[in-house]
Image (cartoon, rainbow, N blue to C red):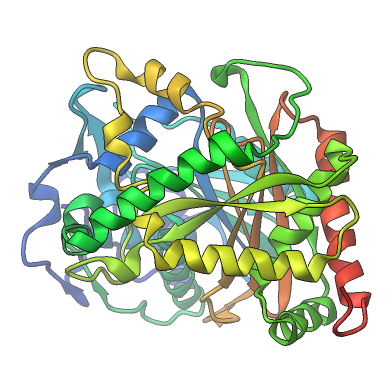
Length: 477
C-alpha cells in the first residue's frame, strides 16, 4: 500500500526536494478501509470503458485549476499529493488488459507533478491546454497528473484526470484535500486525519436500484422516442466545421473569460427573479452566440448538451470519493438570432428539469455499453460511431459554486477554473464555475473544427448576450 508521508517542517523541505525515495510510512491519523484497496482489481464498468475507448482515439481529459496565494512549492505539493493518493484507490490504478477486457489494476507509481514557471496570467491557460491534450499512458502509468504553475507567492495547481476514473466532483475532492494538507504543512501544523477508502464497484452496479423497475423501462422507451423525434423531426443544426480532421488530429483549446463579482451577483439574483437558473442563462447566451455564428436567417432548432451528476442516485451512497459517476443529456430549443435571452433561459431550465425528472440521465451514459462494439480492437470503431453523434451544437457544464474554502492554513484560494476535453462529443463547450462570487466562463473548442478567432467571437458573443440580458428591464421579453 502507498505510504503516507510525515509532516513536513520548513527544515525538512530542502531534504524533500533532493530525495527521490518515497517518504516513510505514517500510521498516525490513518484509518484503514474494510478491504485493502490495493489488494483488489476490478473490470471497468460500461461508462468507464466507454471513456477509456474514446480516449484511445483522442484525448478526453478533465481538468480543474485552483489559483492559490501563499508559500506553495513542489516539496509541499508532493507531500500533500502522496497523502491524497494514499486515500483514494483510483489514484493508484492503471488500466491493464487491453481494449477487450480492461481492468483497474494497482500500481506503486506516484501521481506525477510537473512544475512550470509562472510568467503571467497566460501561463496557466497554456498549461491547461497541454494538460487537456496530453494522453495518459494508461497501460503503463496512472490516470491523473498534477501541474504546478509556480510563481513568486502566487501559484496555479492543475489536476488533470482520465475520464475513466473521475468526474468533476472527484476533482473538487482531490484539490480540496491537496490544499488542506499543503496549507497545514506550509503553516507548520499537523495535516488532517485521512481515511483510506475502499475500491468501489462500477457505476452500473451502484445504479441497479434506480434502473431495475417498470418506471425505468418507461424511461428507456421515452428516451429513445425523444431521440428519434429529435433526429428525424426537429433535426437540430450543428456548428459548421472549418476544416475536417480525424479525432487523433484534433486538439482541445481554451478561451478564458470571467464575469466580475458585481455581474455575477446580479446574474444570480436576476435568474431567480426570471424563474430560471445560472445554467439556463449561460446555455441561452451560448445558444444565441451559436445562432450568430451560424448566421441564422430564420429560427432554427439548436441542441445544448450538459453534464449531470449521478451521485445522488447511487446505492449504496458514495461520499467524497474519486470515481466516474456522471451522465450527459441534450435539450433542444428553438433559437432565433438576436432573440430575447430570458425566455430562452427559462426554456432551457424547463426542458432540463423535465429531462431529469423522466430520468433520461439514467439512460444515456449508464446504457452506453449497448453501443460498444464487440470483437477485437473495438476502440477505433467506437470512436467513429460516437464522433459527431451528439445532437448538441454546443454544451454547458456548470458545476455551480465551488465547494472550497477561501483559505487553507497558509494558502489562500483566489480563483477556480475547470475545463473538459470534447474532441468527439462536440465542437465547443462552456465550462462554468462560481467561486467567491465571481463566475468563470471557459470555452473549450476543438481545433481545427473551430478556429481560435471564431471561438473567441462565440465566447465574447455569449458574454455580450449575458450582459444584454442583465441590462434588460425586468419582465422584458
